[in-house]
Length: 107
Image (cartoon, rainbow, N blue to C red; front, side, top):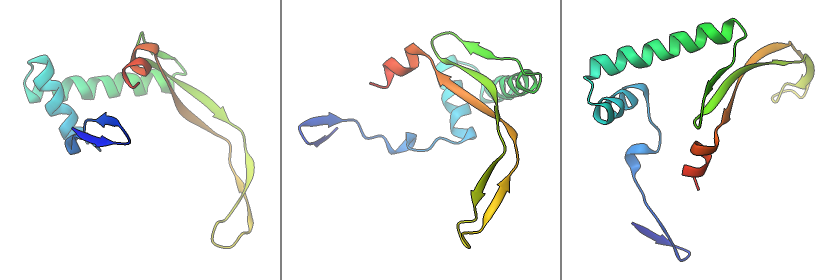
């Protein structure tokens, strides 16, 4: 524990930036699955979610959050190096909206 401005905060450098391998390790530890099975489960989740989003479906995990696709309109931007105006094309973007349980755990 670290004390800053009369607040106690838990510092865990292991979780400052989690990569795929670390996520698989944590999933295996929490679920009791092997790392290989956890990797298969994560890969399946990513594949199924990607396929659904490509079909313009919404993925809702009650309490955790929802993934959806949104259309971003074409717009005019600026090249940060030259300041010259550039045309930015319209595109689809993935949005994630955190659920109430996840949001509550962060506070």
